[in-house]
Image 1: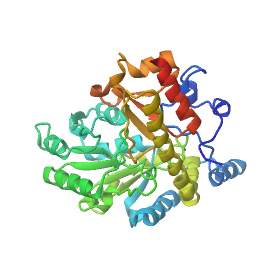
Image 2: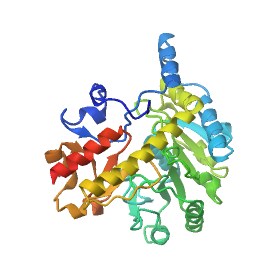
Image 3: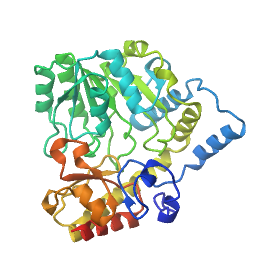
Image 4: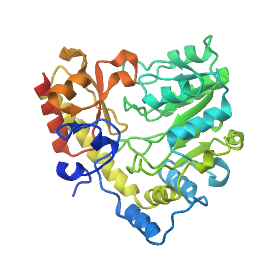
Length: 375
């Protein structure tokens, strides 16, 4: 049975953000939760811990070691879990901890709109200034714009990179990442990369961890098993330092490592150890859903523009040809389907929507039917 095959009636019994934000007649295809059941090994570890009352504080380095083993097997990346990896909260709390350790209030931080909204929130919410380096027209890194941002009057101290990029789904190449690190080195900019979607790439796609490219030894990565294995309800992240950036780990805020939970560390570790084949199967199903969405839109909503990309389970759809004042709101109000508004990712993209494709093919088809009904 396909992983993305849960029935809508079963999914609607869930009480998470995705399924409780909107009225029951709305099809929710917005926030990044997946319509999957827990992997059996993850479920077993969780239930066993509860049965033995193992609900105290986290301990040890098993999670870091499991990630290092996966990185070696998947990408040939050799990590020293004891010196390069630290346990932390979720990815955004980890980014905050790294920014607190490497920048000061008033410093500028570069981001690439359209980008995951919490990037903007974590920078401005903690008294740093935002410097924007827009993506290019194809949704990829614009190295000229990035160089201009790094060398501009804001004199940024850090750069938040999203890899793979959310929402465009771009998977950065080794050449692109190497250029990023060269630009950052020349300008004295610390690069911090969110790699939570690293395992969510289409079959046959090469993901390149930033810390493995020339210059990456000076960067930091933040990640977790939360996205690829649908474990957002269990807060546990990892901060990984390049071999020449381990001093940052010693400078992290004192409570950074205490913001994850014991059960979260147990289930994230179980996912990394036991469920690699599972996420490979999931990636293939997501790739099929991307192709399905492209076909359905071409047939039923041809004015919408969507080009499938190889990263993440999120689709970035240009609705500017539909003649709608506010596409996400109109799809919700009239079509009863909820997408993430493009304006949340960049003010310039108010005519775009982000669509969550970690669902059954039947829901992809239904979502497009509701889009067409809106028109």
